[in-house]
Length: 135
Image (cartoon, rainbow, N blue to C red):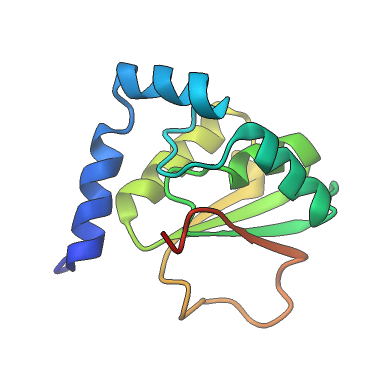
């Protein structure tokens, strides 16, 4: 499989995202430790979950989720299931590992795909979120 420039760039970002200094900075600035590749704070993620009305049993789609932030966090906080989707395989590997570590692997599916060509039928999800995707 040949990587395009965007996939290569994100693969490289995900590779360094777990560095101790970056995790420390993420905790300090964003209030999370999901190897985030964006700027969404924990407070903003909490507000997002409230705005879309997430609750136990819902199905959430997190577009452009990278390593799983904030979709995995929202799933854990609200008891819903989540599909994280990202074009970079490395981000999906990281989100699957985090879901396992957080004890929510049974409610998580990581999918490598692009947002403009979703591999799901209409009305599969109760809520869809994306953060820092269009930057």
